Every structure is written in structure tokens, then in C-alpha cells.
Amino acid sequence: MITITKQTARNFLLRRMIYPELQQQGVVQLLQCLEAIQLDPVATVERNHHLVAGLRLPAFTPADLENTLKNGQAFEYFAQAACILPMKDYPLFADLRGQMRAGSQDELKRYESAASYILSKLADEGPLPSNAFASETKVRGGWHTGEEKTKETSHVLTLLFQSGQIQVVGRDGATRFFARTEEAIPLALQQQELEQSSEERCHALLRKYARAYRLFSADDARYGWQPKCPAAVRRGLHQQFVDNGTFTEIQIEGVKRSYAVLTEDLPELLNCLELETPRGIHFISPLDSLLWYRERIVDVYDFYYRWEIYTPKEKRTYGAYVMPILMDGNLVGRMDPLFDRKNGILNIQLISLESDISWSSSHKSRLVEAFDTFAKQIGAGQVSLPETVTIKL
Image 1 (cartoon, rainbow, N blue to C red):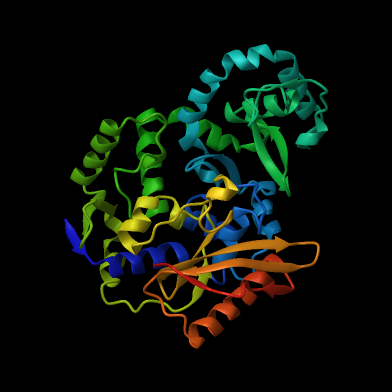
Image 2 (image 1 turned 60 degrees about the vertical axis):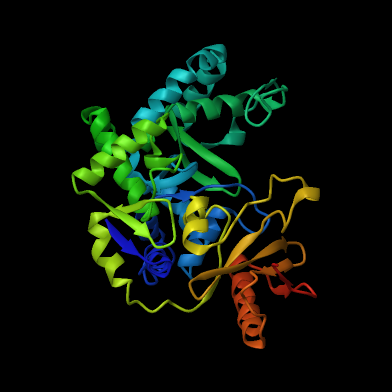
């Protein structure tokens, strides 16, 4: 076991997750570096997957990410949640697809006619947008599990996607384009899925998870992205990887929870002992991989974060789309943005700083400059700031 300081842990996460050496490369390399980018349709400011890529690639445009799907360089499925993933990893999710296929078998049988219609249309016409499948029938599905509000074909498209029979091969805003799996996934990857054992996939997926998190704990309920994995099994699998030298245990000073890193990452972690913290101000999107494991944010940054978009308005503390402010390697506060697209204005509705942060003129000018940069990134021409800045007591 190796003991490190919180600052070393922060520097390591920053180097591996926020400042990867990709400035002159593209979104395909970024996706391979991050292992997965979480998808989310909420566009209060910009969609999460676009914010994640834009933070790390200054020249990024949304079309860059969509093109990875169109060009067969990526696919969509469930890792941390719904994610876009490098195409080479398609076989690793065979067991989850199998579980979902078994779980949706009865539902697909119930809507057999709609499923056949969709698959036949895709076979005849190739990739199609979701709105190409007309249906007047409403069923229980999607977010409306208690009422018949979901279009039947939309529900069946979801079932076919989850069970691995069709793939997302493009996006245009919130519209997804679908194709049959046998036409969207390279034959070599389909064959690899058949040749791999479940144990091989499990171990490869755990290593992928470790590369995505970089500093991780077996306490994480999503540990290893293993489908339906009880806590005892998670811990046993973790210990197996520690014992065989794949993982190295890490103790962070002042933190009770134990962590681990990939042993291959140890040289870079140890290099961070003396590394100067990079300067800069960034705004972290709610579903950025840095924030996936909320307990790690508390342990490493002494910072509590909660995305309040699903919290009733009257119970919110900071705002619906509250984003942490990363300043010079530390999480120093939060801001609540809202993009008025009609008028091209990025409204910063709230700025709240932690109690140990002073609101100096230097901080203010740097933050204003960072807001201007963020506004340009999302396509806003103007920034509106709140009259006051709150300091957390």
C-alpha cells in the first residue's frame, strides 16, 4: 500500500482526467483516453457529452462527437450510465446485453409486430432516424411507466437497442439514428464477442473501469461496471486484482476509505508528489467522469456536490444545472448557468464560493475571463453575471 496526500491525488486526477495531453489531437483520442463519455439530453447549457469533450478539446464542435458514431469509431451503451464508447470495446458489454435481452424477452414478444416492422424497415432502407417509425399507439415505457404516454415504436426501439439487436449510428440533436447490429458493428468484433469467455470480459471491463476512474474504490456501487454485482463479489474481484498485481492499494492521508490505482499508473502517480498544480479555471459538467463517484469528490477535494436538476425547485440550494468551479486544481465553488439561446446570452444565475475562498479582484477578473471563454465554447455572444457572489458559511 502507498500513502499519498490529497494534493497528490488531485494532481493525479487532473493530469489523467482533465488535462490529458490531447490538445493537438481529436475526439477519437479523447474518447480512448477517457474510456467513456456519459450521454445526457438535458441542454440547459449544452448537452453533457459536448461539455465533457469541449472542456478538454478547445477546438471541439458537437459534430466531432457525432461523427465518431457515423464513422463507426464509437458505439453507445450502458457503462457508468448511457455512454458513448470506443468501438473496440463493443464485445465487453455482451453479458449486460444478454441480461437485458432476457429481461426484455416478454416485452418484445408483446410488441412483436412493431419489432418486426422496425427491423424490416432498417434492413430495407439502412440507417434511419427514430422519427422514421410512425405509430399512433401509446404504451407504458420510457419515463412514463405508469401511464400510456410513450409512442409504441419509441418503446420498441429502446428494447431492441438495450437487447443489442440495433445500434445508435448517429445523432442530430436529440434525434438518434439506428441501424441493425449486424450492419453497424464490424464482423471481427462480433466474432470476438463469441470467442471471449464471460470471465475474460469481466476482467477486461474492470480494467476499462479502472482506466476511466484512475483512482477508484471497491465501495463504489458501479465498481467495474459489472452487471448485477453484489458488494461481496465486488470486493472479492478487487482483492483478486490487488493480489495479482494489476491494482495497487492507495491510502490518502486523512481519508478512511481505501482506494486503488492501476499498477501501471504508479510512475505517474508518484511523479505527482512533486508536481506543480496546473493553473486555470474550468466549469465541470454535472456528469463529467471526475464527478462520477461523489464520495471521491468529498474525500479528495473536501467538496460536496449534488446535481439538483431533479430536485424540486423550492428545495434546491444552488440551482438546476449547478456546475463545480475548478480553479488551479481545487474545487472552489459552484455556478448555476442558463443559456438563453434566443438572445445568445449565457446567464450565470448564481456564483457560490467555498468558505475558505476569498473574493479578490484577481479572482473576479480571472473568473469573468473564464465565463467569457465558456460562453464562446457553447455559442453564446454575451455573459450576464449575478449582482452578488455568495460565500458558503
